[in-house]
Image 1 (tube, one colour):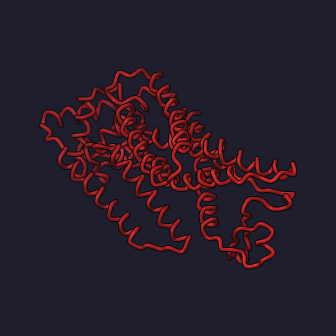
Image 2 (cartoon, helix red, strand yellow):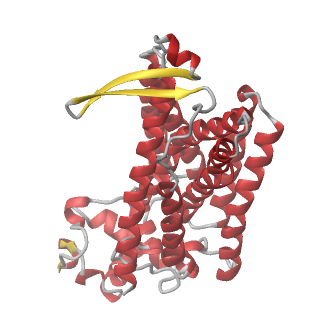
Image 3 (tube, one colour):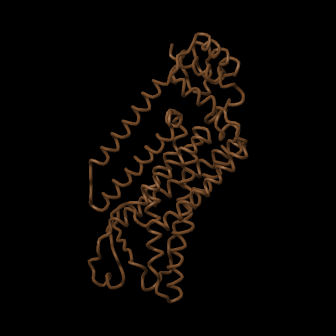
Length: 385
């Protein structure tokens, strides 16, 4: 039953995240593509910008008011449940996949941290992320100071999470902290500001523009955080990244590249296209990949025949042959990946055996660290022979 709950939550999470990210991309594009209204009557009615669009076989004329229209329309479309559903389904996945299996999925292998303590720290960090972020935004208004400060805080969160949690959980923890900040922005700032505009119009008062300006700032900040969060959602499928040496540094570099990509597109929406920016982002990505690969090659420890022999015994006794194909072991399983074809590195095998992935369970606590290292050495040396 838990597998079905996992599937349902993942599906809901992906659907909600796609909707939220899509609306974020669209509204920032819309806001940054506005042009001054050409009709003097529109300008006199409070229209601050307009945009003509063509999509789906038709033309659209979108207008944005400086503060609010003179007469409140009967129908208003609200955009909030995309954010709320993304956070709720994401927290549900954390609960099912990490908190209920904290001893094997959340706690860092080899640590003696009690599972309930790890869960408490994880939840506490979600709340702390929002509080620190919100206070910082209230104290620092200059984006030239705010964004470097936020970057440093994300780096600290990535490093701290890597010290506390398992490699895969550490990356997801950072993503959950940023996702919490984004959802809280919607719940505590953006939607209340919009409700205040509506209440002012309904009460016959002149709306205060300040809350709307602050809400827009938070919305734009959310836009730059979308791709970093999306990275952590996908990273669980790439152990070579979250399992790399100095994985916290790898994470923040990839997040920076994602935010850099959003900056390129947001500038492009305003008519400023700098093609050197995606080139620089691609070069940074390649440089990071080369650095990680070389670090893995340098860190690869030589294995002895006795170590490999022990790994072969573990492969047989732990039931690996039932799920995987490995000719050297006479294994023909088809449930998991064909190891002969995949030829995984020892680091990748060790991570999968320790943390599990998908239908593969975690063997942390079932196999000793020596046995896990041995079976990883055996598989990496025997695969593809």
